[in-house]
Image (cartoon, rainbow, N blue to C red; front, side):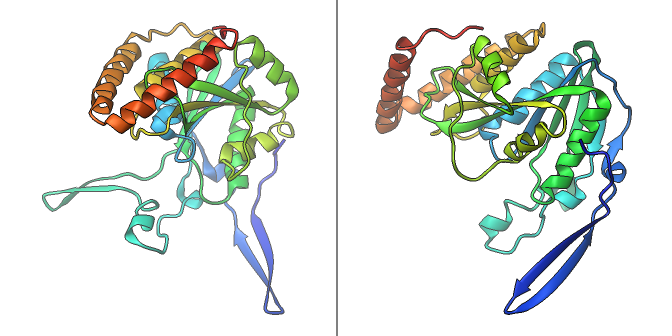
Length: 305
């Protein structure tokens, strides 16, 4: 596990036969971690959410923020965002807009400038630590140090990430959940909970995949739940947020009132269905997805939970 304090990072580069040494100062972990109150949990669980990669439909951040609200979780710490993000990236307006913080100006006055936040919340009654932040652009190792260090101080033994990816699930059906674990023992445990689909993927890595490669050395177990959501939709997906929240509540034995989520999910589905029916080609694609989804479901044993 990480216990030290990184103060300097060195890179040695070669270019056109010449060697260069670049040194950069890395802030002390105690400077990056702004702790308001240190919780102490009994075999705690940390639930992670990151905006950006794997947050399609706002399933990652939307689910964990909903848990924060339903559990009345209290903010207890944050990670200083300043060293970890790129704000001024060269390129076209379309590219740079992805990096610059959003601003709202009204009648000549700046009303809001939204800088990244990385907040820890705690619900001690259920031994839960919750984190909602933005996936870092820079210094993944140091950001990971902050997460693992605060988890260690808080008594966390297991980390659970929830996210999403666009796929062939129609908006009229529940999202399919895929699991990735830091060791085989947890995969077997997930199967008993009805999470039988295992992720298979090769391509650009998420920050949570990086965290999972470190979990064993940091003395914690780590699980990633990725919801397959409709790839043809943009914006918040209340149905998928409800489905993932419901699954987490069952896994963690949380007595949550999900009626408001259910109502929002139903209204959203009706609105999307109305819009889809106005596009004959898309409506046909959705019907084909529904048929494929239902046929797959019929060929398998029903999931538990």
